[in-house]
Length: 390
Image 1 (spheres, rainbow, N blue to C red):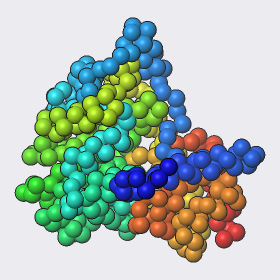
Image 2 (image 1 turned 120 degrees about the vertical axis):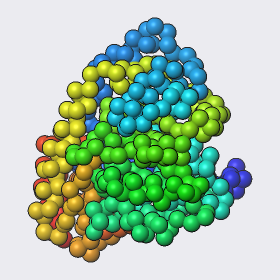
Image 3 (image 1 turned 45 degrees about the vertical axis):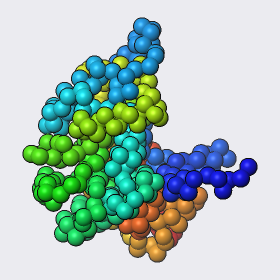
C-alpha cells in the first residue's frame, strides 16, 4: 500500500505522551516490576453508584438508540442549569452541544475557527492536544508561556504583545493541566479586556473547575459581552470519575452551536444515549461524592507537594486546582524526558516529562495525584531515593 497517498495534514497530529508512558509502565509491570502510576490524568475513584444505576435503568427502558446530534433536550436543560449554578453563565438548550468526551469540543472548535494564516494562542505548558489540533486545522499555534516564577499564570503583558490581527482564538484552561495553576479573576477580566474590541474568540476549557482548593474560578463567559465570543468546554470525566463514559459538552452562541452540531452529524452522529441519561443524574443527583473526591485530591496534593519540596534539588509550586503537581527538576542536569524515563525504569514511578506539554515544560515533570495516598507516599519515597542517587 502506498502510504504517500495519506494526506499531509495527518502528519500534523501528535499523541498524548501520558498514554505512551502508561503503555511502557504497563509493560514493565507485566515483567514483574513494581510501578506506581502517577502518569495518567484519570481519577482512581469509581463512578458514583447512582450514575451507574441511571445508565442501567436507561438501557433497560430501551434508551439505546440514536439521539439528536447536539444531545437529548433533558440533558441540555440540566447542563444549562449547571452552567448558571456553577459558572454564573445563563444559557439555553440551543447553545449547548453534547459530544463524546471533551476533546471533540477542541477539535470541532479548531475546525470551525482555525484557517490557514490564522493564529491561535494556547497555554504552554498545556494539554498537548491543543497544539496538535491547531496544527491540524492549518492555523499557526502561538504559545502562551506559563512560567513558574508567575505561579504558572498568564503573563498579560506578553499576551497583549502576541495578539495581532491574525489572532483568531485564545485558549485558556482554568484550572490548568499540567500545572494545576489557576488564573485569578483579575487575569480573566484582563484577558476579556484584551479581546473585547477584536474579532477573537475564547475557548475556555473548564473541565477541572469543580476540582479546586481555594477560590472558585471565574468563567470568562460570565463577563459582560463575553458569552457570545466564548466556547466553554466541560464534561463529566474528572468531576464524576467518568473518563471511560466519553461524555462532554460545549456551550457557545447559537450560530457556532449549529456548526458544531453539523460536525457531530458528519462524524460521531451523537453521544451514546444511555450515557446522556446517566449524565442527567450526575448533574441533578447528590453531589457529595464529587465533593469527597475533591477533598481527597486536596489531601494528596498537600502531601505530595510537601514531600517533593523536602527533596533536595526539587521545588514545587502548590497547585490550586485539578489533580496534578508540576515540580521543577532542572537542578539535576537531566532533561525532563531523561528524568521521567530513568525514574520509571530505575525506581518504578511513572510520571510525564514536562516537555510532553510543550517546550516551556522543559525542566519539569508532571505527577498525577489521582492515585491513593498510600501509593503516593510510596512514590514520594522512591522519588527521593532516585534524586539522592543523582
